[in-house]
Image (tube, rainbow, N blue to C red; front, side, top):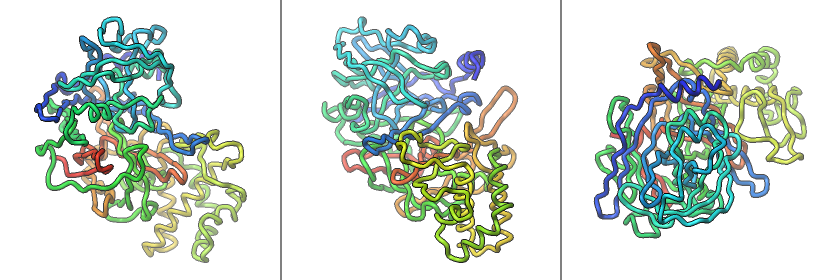
Length: 495
């Protein structure tokens, strides 16, 4: 994205709501009102969700660049408090803001910067750190000061002062930093997260926080996060609670994803899902996102090689499947995958795993192998629905046309939204449907309206994957309770 475009994005994006308002009931419950900003095409197309794998610890490190983040609130650091706009992010664990020592990055001049000399409660720590961001990290160092969230003061909170804001894309941000609400074992330098300190200092009576995101684009209030409690006005019925599957992220298990009550197959035995308030999007396996794109008419462009495989090998793949050959062997047998492969990667559709993280012993497959594996999977799903060979080959050919855009989102027809199907996630043996209005993004650009599908590809191999990331499009539909005390998450229909 060009520098002129970034300046334009920074200057013209309109706020939907007024300044954040914070209140507390005085009984261990603190509310922080959230702002909501409108997305623009540039920031949406620049948004990234990625994952990398640490080859030493074999645990996932989740990366994103926050350019599609819509909701944020105001905090204060220091005494007297210096104000910062931050994203309250359940997908990360550190608090970070720009430092007064960030002088060589243009982006820092467009955001509030922390000035330790102006605070009489500042304590120097000075430990250097690198905060995961986008495709890599941003540098900084650890400091300590008092933190105001709502009308409570967290004493001696450690946080990162960022000294370089990296790419010019930071200019497009309408917030200053990130307040991570994740777990300490994912915190850089093992810094104690803000939420942990709220509990340890007795500032909340219940070990929960809840999130409500207002989906009304003209409402003054963009949403609300409640620390220590639940606002009963923000949901209908009862919450469905499911346990966390690990204590790295707010991660749960989801079952099959259905398109208009039709199964997509991959997650029938369960898939991991990170609940992430730091992104607007819903990310998931390409095999399923492509089926969704086909159903909603989303346009992608990575299709030529995929369609070639159908035309050249479709009949052979069909024969192999009905003969009972193991699916993982089919693409090897027809020569599109290597015989010593240990996992699938993808050079055309941008995947979530950096190949170098897996070490030199791993085999790097060609895009043809990835396409072949997806085609085998799609054909198996259709066979379970007892469709004919001709109908299956035609359907899979159509799916190839709907492969997700590898570097951005996919367009959908704004005039056809009423005819699009519901997309349903299965959580805790209960259905959580999303209507077309809930899973699409409507972007106003001058006099024009552009509609995007909210689903993007994210391919993570086992054992971390398959993996979904449920961002604000999902959280806007369902009021969410993050129950730290019982290590579970609850969802109820948002009011």
